[in-house]
Length: 281
Image (cartoon, rainbow, N blue to C red):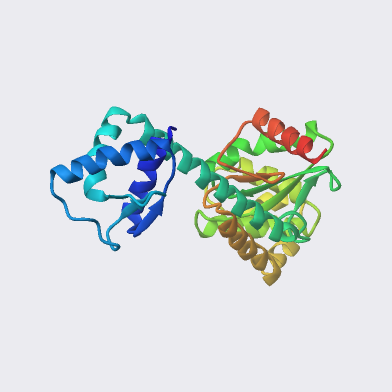
């Protein structure tokens, strides 16, 4: 971007923000002021007041909105790519700021996100890379990636996967989540999780009890544990965590320190895990 283009963008921002004075220096500005003054003199415009948006140059010359307006308009018509570049730069800065905020959140929530004792964990408990999945048993996209998540665990002996029950698709999603956490108390989370992901249809209490029976759970204990307030507290904690992380749909992954929304392939998972591993080395 040229210095002239930079001047134009600065002045436009000044107009939008309502600032009284901005400062800019350089040969291009001195050349511009001559043109602006000529236009101003030809139209017999009054000198700008302190309250009107203006640019004061080092030599004391003042460029006001009336003088610069036609010049800016013509320049942008001749060089529309300046606007595209400015918008692109703004988007880059916004994305960088958003990522910085996310990394700050990750750091402040690290214990609850990665090491909560109430969140089920599969894979290597001491793995060098942790992948967190926020999911709902009724979510078709979660069902689509379920086998790939298990396959990742089988293929990578050093990956650790934390499952965050995140029921957002209705009351029966919550029934399934409670049943899965209850199954975890019997050490059968993996079996229940896989079976629930293959289930098609609603998750009534009778359905989750039958799934529990099919995978070898003590169904009386399962039903009793589903009423444990600690399980509902885990779900509420997951919802609060998702909100802080900006996860508002399922599935949502955190791989290392990178947020990955939506369904991804096994190859995507492996590449992201490898990237997270490289960043740690």
